Length: 216
Length: 95
Image (cartoon, rainbow over all chains, first blue to last red; front, side):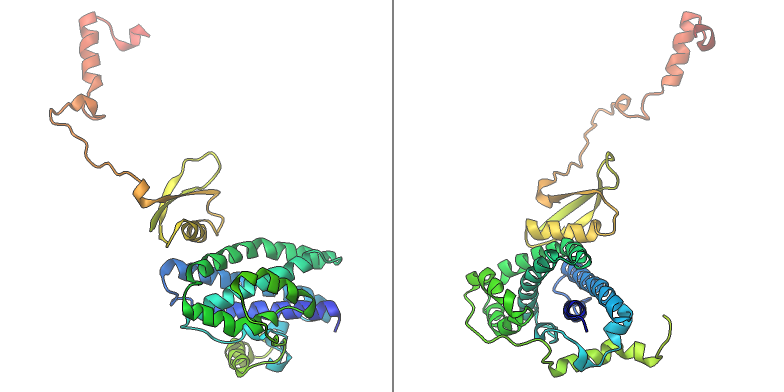
């Protein structure tokens, strides 16, 4: 697999799984406006995943659906941060949302500066939507950062958040989150999957697996 | 806080009331308004107004029944007819 395809798959897997996890709030978010807002963010993330899978798929000779749903759970390249189910814990959901959006911004900025015009162009498009996700995440964090449960969640998820980025970009994440005064920790590397991914995969692919090869 | 949201469908058109959103502060209000009333290309601009900034007026006093203030209270047709008869003219010949 080319380095480019590998990198695109990592981000696509993150966006797909986080989009899925965020969509688990649809219908039960803390209030109606937030329900619509968070569901919309989830839809955007899955839209980004599709665009990234399509670009990776051109290198790999596969469709976006084949990449999203036809791989075995252990083949996913997702970060540990996006895998766990947090419903009905809004504190951890917001902590993850904020950590992820901050890390994702660093990653997208790097892609925008890429020499590969296709990658840079797609990253710029994705970033125009991510601006709103970041605003949303920042508003929520600002509102809840004084809550002990959110603080605990930030500390708990911090090693996994570092694992979203490669070694080279981690110092930037530490720098941007300096104000949160998070501890020095060993990052949880990408690709070490928890049981929760397998469980999510079962649900996520059940319809597609029910009639292999069908056209939907 | 409740925010009343007005939306403009096309540039140059007047803003119409779209609905309201409840939000903890102005920033959240803007965000939710955008999601509810702007994300499907249905608006080119929104006004997001805290409800307490909207002054409602619902009393229109008319104690002396000044029906000539009302659009239906001044039957111009009849009065015009009388005036013309007095002047000995008709509408068509005048023109």
